[in-house]
Length: 125
Image (cartoon, rainbow, N blue to C red; front, top):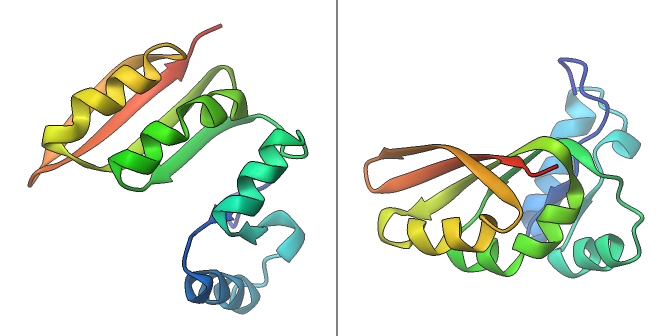
């Protein structure tokens, strides 16, 4: 946001992390309307209600299980030709994550470091 992005959405299952995010936004003079934070259930409810608009880039740094479960939701949040960056994936689970996303996205790069994987993909038109 400080580099001119219009909006971010923060999602975490730890209420303390959400409080810390709100505090950091306040310290950095970031309008809370530009960076709403929420628990996963509220996030999925908002996706289902279509109150969250599609984005150009979606970043998710969570474990493989939640990434796989959220694939269809995330696909609806990325504009055609937009990008998704997935991280927090153990190397041995990378193939399962790729399989969950290849229906919606074209995998562009897979980077591995110290047993962790990052996947960058582009939303199919």
